Image (cartoon, rainbow, N blue to C red; front, top):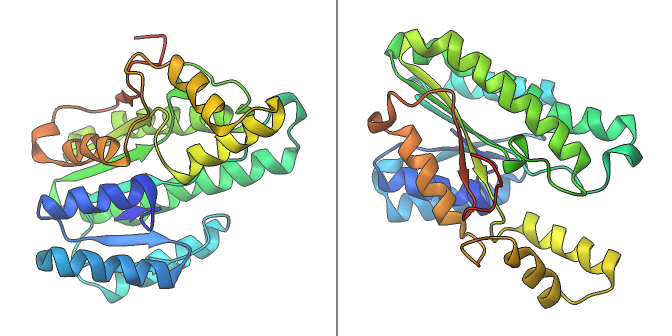
Length: 254
């Protein structure tokens, strides 16, 4: 079950998992886009048996109802859950309204928790589970002008580590993948905002961001997806409760 799977990192992760032989459940807001993505996966990987459910991740109760209905209608446990939701808008923490924090908390931590609880029974019964949260390098080093995101991502990271400690004995691992600057719609939005604030071009904004990355380039979604796919595999069975940066070396801490 891969969230945010109609585009970006979520879509790349779905493709990578299908290549490994997984059956796929795609989740996002737009049912038409999800249907299209399922058709693409099933054409390329017939064994993927891709299906989908759609809900608004700003509404945890809707997500809960939708996933429970899906699981009731489809047999078989979910062995892999990839929590992946688009980040909150940028801006300094001191200027953010309470409602901004509440929206981000609902979309990220609460929905992650709802989905984890929905699939944990099947994972425990199977003796195998992988919960992978796609969050941000900000859990190691807060990023400038992403105050709400920094705050909520930190909460998700600590939730994840707590679950890892609680669930390891059942053969379930819980890990976080921390993408750096990755070529997605999210990065484009951040760059556009930087252009507006600083009065510079997209090329200048990109160059400034790339300058801080030792690899001197942005990541491709497929590179983040490769880390997700590995953590989902049996080979990663003894990796539990970690934050794995995929950031070209940008984060200034170990």
